[in-house]
Length: 507
Ligand SMILES: [Ca+2]
Image (cartoon, rainbow, N blue to C red; front, top):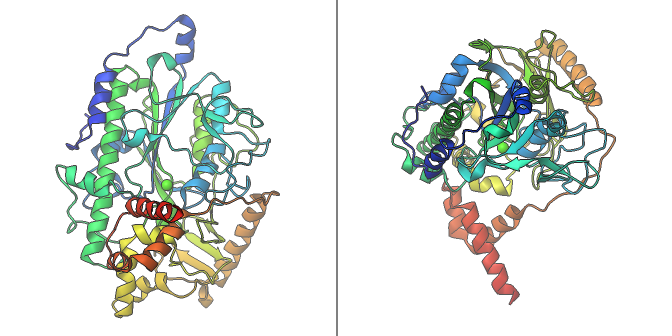
């Protein structure tokens, strides 16, 4: 039933072997607890709805297809920020990140969360759940947390002197039931492993088969980059299959809910870092083996609703502060999703978006910061940006493709998502749409006020990529020229070389 393409991954095999030897008997007390479901939250890095079950061409994701066919596939799920840490902060608390002052990427890591909020795992533990982070069989053990408040991975939480978010690492033990596990699927995040994953695939994605969105230029380098991204999708699909097989072998498949979600959109033009659909519209599949589902759900869902849904599955009464709602309750009622973009590395931003499903309105409070802001880290990881900058100079981009490379952003954007899903036509200045715009503008203001924190503390980590890029430009001009030609020269490699150079100079 669970099919894998042959992808070299020794850890997958090891976990299978380990999985066969861990049956155990339960005590009567444990039997009572086991009537509640286990819950696994699979968090895939940096993906838009680019899966076979969402109709994406050129990619095969049989295990996720199976989950979607037997569970609920959500067509309209959105994150609250298009970058990892603010989005994850919102999901970890179940509250929009702007309300908890956790909206700036890699900030406030030494500041405790306001005492009126708690990570949702606190409530799961209170209710007798074992909370688990990561899995021994996935790439790098899947242990990322990445939230913008003081925290530790493992240990107790009181929010004052103890900041542990999970009980333990890695293994889904029968004796730990009921358990909640959050497992990060990292491969789809940009990284130095993308080429290796592609090389080891028995059937790599064919660049000629991929279908690029109209805001991307159709160029061989961009097609190959897109194919590599889809190779990573196939890799995480195999990891999903491995986890599901482990549940079957341990006799837990019938009592374990699986939630699959992306933490933010794909790392490419208009994706991660932006409030366009590619940045905030994510895949969401929920499979509950206890009920017959087989549904496609069209409701608007915010990522904070997933947090509320997990607590609801565990039978926990919901804390009042949640901004999310349990999705499967009859009174679930979400008319809008609200997303925001604030600081990312050296680029301070302030954009806000509201979507009703039909209409999407974006307000850019810093229009002077262009979409293509030249952010150092992204210079290493977005070949399409380099290629399309050159094409723009040569006059080879269409008007829609050129929008991303304009010198500034419009202060307001309005899109008709039903008729323009790729957001190619900004209607904000069109006379016929002023009434819609005004309505959305006011609704956005209401949500902005509702999700506003009183705390404006900001402590930032210096982004190392800024130094590495400056060094390459000054000392390694031919490497920079290769980057400009769309080559991924290796961020990790050049960070190491830069650090070695600094150490030499210090001596
Ligand atoms: Ca991410």
